Image 1 (cartoon, rainbow, N blue to C red):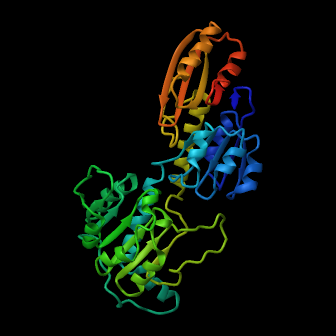
Image 2 (image 1 turned 60 degrees about the vertical axis):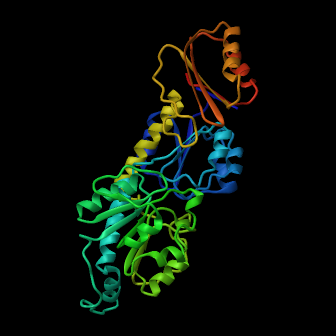
Image 3 (image 1 turned 90 degrees about the horizontal axis):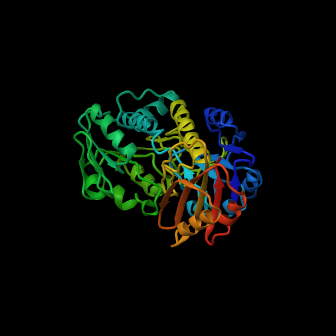
Length: 406
């Protein structure tokens, strides 16, 4: 499979991606199609014909079947943090790098977590629901300040670490647990085990990634280990929590309240119905996956991801790709740049150079980066060369894709 600079440049953006992304791609010479909702299966395959750049958020399911049927697809942009909705292995095997936005909505998620913590500690959801019913419940319950309370953060990555800093600024004590050793910020201290964190925290906020080991991370045993009257927050992944177990912990009075922004199964479009065990509970805040859905975060993402896409399409750079060997490449003038993507097996770089040498093609510069499965070679050559060399490069065994950038 190969593409060249003469191929049509078309992009497809789904799920109401911020208009800044479409403008950026259009300015770079792409024809941009936009569809407001998510797509899957045959509908997505049909829309991907002739598309070289795909931009999605969290609802579109990019399965192996879809990837293998999208013969023109060269690069995928996930305009969000998570990439669970994308078959990264299938993309890798087809020579399609995937880029996401690991930092752009961090502040937005943290602000929502802090707001939910304060509202639940002050018993606002229950009192607000009562007042909506016409009931004055000023004196009920035991509202509490967050100052002096201990926040336990499960997952100390970009979001967890920033939440740690802002929570300390509010006067909270912070502890955290992560499966990978992380540098503590401020006065935060690590907990050796999740159980240790649960037993000492007034608030538990979950910010883990989408790896399989985090499925059902919180169930009956974990909620039983939490302090009485504690608050539980999940803005990470829906499959992290057993919702029925959480409901029982809330209904029994074990927990003061909970806030969830993510769910095991989420509708693909606004307006679609959803049923959850926690619906109707006055001490629970339910939000429809809006942690990163601020104007600022979406604008930041819509600037970050297109830049990564264009750096790949125009320069060959794969820096910060989630599935590809990472190469940061300089701009090249007065020459051609040829990208060769192949299975990481011995001898392919030598075969590439043999093809070029046989054609008496001068190599101006060459870059190689591999991971355990894929090799990525960028070769800068003089302007004058026989186009048949591209066909010869494609014919090298285990080649996935050849691209001539310019």
